[in-house]
Length: 239
Ligand code: PXP
Image (cartoon, rainbow, N blue to C red; front, side):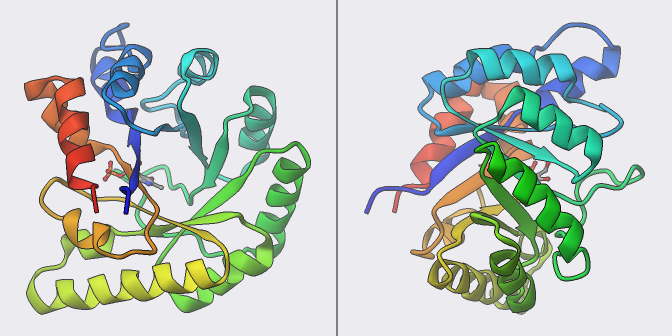
């Protein structure tokens, strides 16, 4: 049955560096260890305010990483220009607000249809596939198909935060979302708030193909090292 593919988000390695505005720890060095541990991809979010990942990180990661490089970004003119220049293996479009601690909700694809369509056309013309980070809702998934995305990353933050019966309801919501995406030939990915404790229920959804996980892996890596942290997560992603 294989396993769910893992893209490790190394943003928070850069967060620690930026806490002192120095040059360590380096997310590029972290990416080498992620690769050695057997993960499938590296994800970074180049934010408008450059609060963690920098243009330099993206450039060096593009030159050095052999895994699939997934660039999360807002759909702005500046970011599209950077993506066309650096050519990540995939762009994930995310909503972005300056004051947020992390990405809070999924993209409103329905409400920003023309603008997202234009960004996808521009990136696809240059051969850069585009995934959309959306809430696991039927309307958004159908809109992602209509707008021309090749994949969707279903926002699992509400699942991760819910408890008890609410958690079961959120899991059912993600399950329905992954099934619909798969039927529409959109590659079903999941991400946000996933941990060593809550990821197994998502692995049990056969349609889920990839997971993007950052904070939990980097947190464990601080204590046990990046390679071990990634290997432990990969084991949990086995079907
Ligand atoms: N996917 C997207 C689109 C994100 O914005 C983030 C957070 O940067 C993640 C996945 C990773 O979330 P976490 O750090 O909670 O694992």
